[in-house]
Picture (cartoon, rainbow, N blue to C red):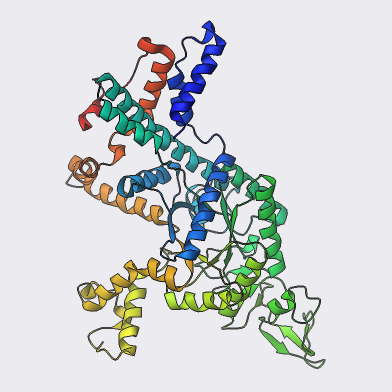
Length: 531
């Protein structure tokens, strides 16, 4: 915001050049409105945030403690409140992003109603949510700057030069709520042309980073469900290229692509890859198929047969017409997926795992880094994991390996509340607390996100309110559990009229109508009860 004063001067010159017809226009008011609307389009946002993300990636390469984080948000208001909270508590949005989860779009934003994470929702709802998130973040900027401008006016009216200088410095050094969004395009919602078209919409809405996965579009499943089906590498690489072309067409040369592999948990493929020569990418993909050697005597009607290193083999085909991979081949497939994605235009990796285990992730990343030394991950700190049970079992196993006495613990029952006050539970909680820093340091994780946190927080807080309000506590259930906490924790939404924009509307009325403006924020506004 360092151009605020110069913008006033520039606007004043423009108004003066127009003469009498513009005499009623206040140059400072116009400059304020421009400052409150710094980003005019989604492409402005994508350009701005792509540079932030690229700088963060470079910083992480030099210091793994500088990892980034985000929370999944399913509504613009949720994203807005998250960023307001971050600015309030940490005085900076540095290295904090937003995540847009396809799961939450399906479950909460589809016109069909709640759907599973299988890409059945309207594809445009994804770009629509990106636009909505940035609309709310831009409004957060306008609201906060409006408060600063009112403080500036109050200091001037009081003749308090020191207060005026302090507020002016805050305006000059203002940090926007606009941060990068990592946006989930699922498996691309169709062929590569469909992926390109949707990617364009997402970028035009403001996305600087698009995450795409290597599942079959029309067989797509949540990464934590069974029945996942992957595609041959060339099919996936075509979609990565489609996203890159979309970025380049729209002038976002530094747009970021996250290539997600579901191969660790995906045991099926719909296609046998095309191969022209032994050892090529298609042949490597097919080498993971579960096959049995055949000859003319045991071939069956309709068999699909392959020549693998001079042997005639039959891939095992299921009644669904899908082919299965060899058991235990998941990690090898993940490593090949990741290397080929990075070699063909992806910037970051996402390995969907079945548990949060630093060493398991590190084992795969170290193999990838043998080929691509600066490979780094976006990792899903998923609510689908039972974090308490997983880390208590990891601690139990570590203690067992170290020869510590674990006879007081039942490994299969470690989730039980009876263990909550134990040393094992305390160590497990500490491992959970440091998981992000540990994994960033040891397993190449640049970005940690929780996909669905605000889905769960909305459900939990609503349950707590409903239990109290509709029970014996009545209105006290709301006052004690919500409003009193808002006031004491300084939650801006306690003044919900202002959060919804009433003060900004008053400012504009004053700009447009002067003393004749009918404003909402007078002495009789009950919002004044909150100070």
